[in-house]
Length: 299
Image (cartoon, rainbow, N blue to C red; front, side):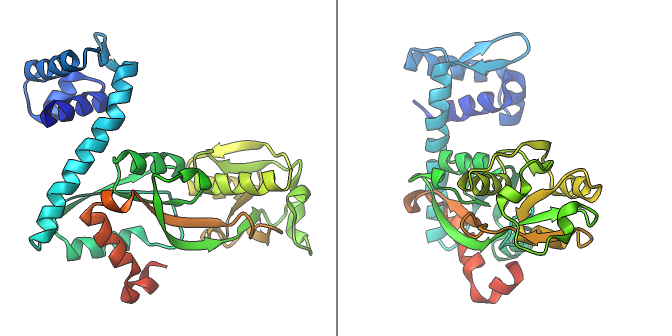
């Protein structure tokens, strides 16, 4: 099995199209097709279901994709490790992050990293914490800034960024705005909730807090960006339970502490693969993040 076969296979799996994958790889379509056929013969299994418009992975193809991505990530890490020993950091830093993640200013951190390591190509992907954890574990991302859960498992390790309680945001004319005592999850029963997709860290933290209190809630307004969530609350269409730092993004809203939220704190971390699989670029970024002179800038 040749590495080029695996690279060709992963490209077709990502693009779900032979022509687009061939163009991206800068190889002929016939050569790409021959490479995939050679891989299928060696494995004695079809890897794709081919139609006139697209190709999809078979069950064997899905199994191979996980391992192929891991192998290619390890090969890339090996190349980068040799370059690092030679005193030059090269290669690619593939980074994932949630929106408005606490504890790090991603843009400033990446600007500082580029200044220190100009030969490293930076790639950034924004997604929910669940997807980001899966991509780090699969080797598609070098690290990710995300919400920490116990489900992350042994495939990942983490560097803590910050931890904060969850806060209730509501319109100033909402009935809860005049509350004089700490709110409990059961005080919010029956409310209309605005929240993120279940893959997002803040949604996971809120779900955990309500599950711990044995309070059922229904999310009527589900969004995938912070500003839309704040707009909906600002129009008094519902309330939101969010990490405390969100309150600074819309000072006109009323922010109320949630009792017991400390137990279901929103902890953000840098998720990384095991030490042996961590790329030199990821190590350099974490070192930069942890350096004393930059800590204040990125908090």
